[in-house]
Image (cartoon, rainbow, N blue to C red; front, side, top):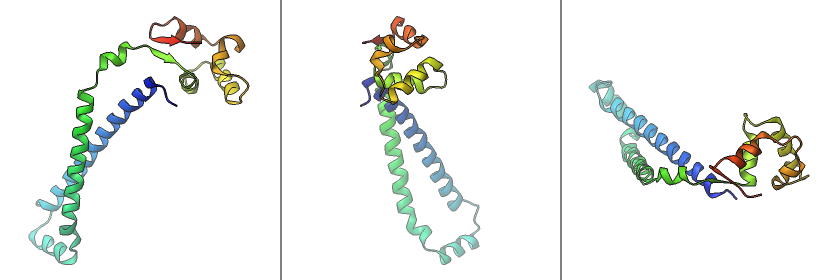
Length: 155
């Protein structure tokens, strides 16, 4: 199960992604409406499109509904970001959990010692809470996490 800090990080990233996707959907739909409805088609071409396919006119309500749904999603995401208390997110120390240590060990900047211990944990040989006793040499990340006021070391 994800810790509250991890969930908060993923939720914030998810909101940003949702906002970006909503903007992209709005932009694509706006371009499509502009292209179909503007001077890119002559009157003759527009008549030919209408005569050859009635799906353009029939799909407009569906496209409009999709546009409005995207606008609603964008508004909800904007409100969530507006109501986000960034200070409280940054001022609360992160509790170091097994999940956090596994995520840290999976990062490209992790020390070889931390990665080796992560392999031992994944193999079921030990637990993250045993890192100070069993890891030799001790990964530098452990000392950094323990000394930092931004993290709470509970083991």
